[in-house]
Image (cartoon, rainbow, N blue to C red; front, side, top):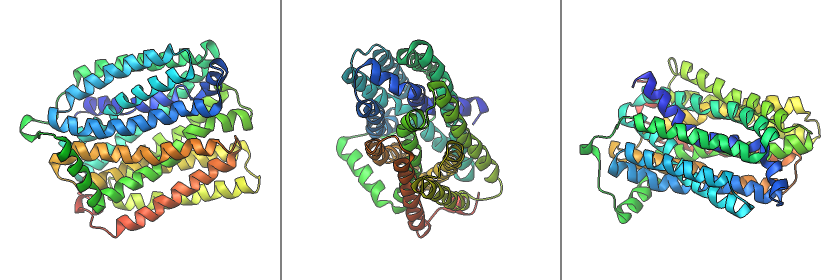
Length: 397
């Protein structure tokens, strides 16, 4: 794979994160402008993620049938149209509806990016490329709030949504230049019954399923912060939208740096070994955050340091668990497996995250969510290590 292709795949995979993180600083402004509750504003995030999970289940089999390029191009065009609709929404329900369409369309980028990597590479090389995708994906949470915060202060939440429209247009241009990675002789007919059978088979594939659930637990930490950080930092700690954007970007920088470190470590250690170490880091740092929050000893800077480390731990967990999971499926199932992994990744975190917001803007509910997902990841990793893992990802290439 050429560096240009890797960069293009990384850009496409971060579209969904950009569509979320750009408007996070504007969540309180949306509540005021549309005269609605914080819970309904958080629903615009939740419905996006749930729709993205549903989109995963569709785009994977479709890309196995028609190739990677055509479904990606159509989805990016739909994403642009939905983003325009969201920016023009006159009430919260219209915004929620447009965010749902955005979520459905945004599924194509990450799913097809993972599928292209799995089409063209295997083993440690695939794990390295998944790590690079995570590194590029990690750029979005760093730059998106920094863009969205000043835009929200300058022109309100609609201007922040306008930045998402611009990103979508660039995504269409990138998709137009992307080469096809799935030759016709490796495509397969897709029927509803066969798709259901494929997903059932993936659930029965214990290594794939356990690896996918580890990815879900790591994403749960990210989703908990995405959903609640705007209210915790702005309402509890008193930050402005721009101040929130800068601190959120600093948190997210940990994700990108950890992805870079993961890529370097993969030259010496197999993915399964790195996965083990970072899961223990995740448990330790989230436990510290929970204890400090419960004893009311969690000042802003301590919280930000712990969140940055927690964010950082999720990057190698997600990339290496993805490599372990996809190594366990047949080449003809890669698109479907990538889609199913993405759906599992989003489903539980999207449901739980807004529930934590019902308990107010204090840091305690967020810390509880962090630690619960870290413990879940530890339990799932214990299950995964007892299962057969292909040599390419357990011992190196």
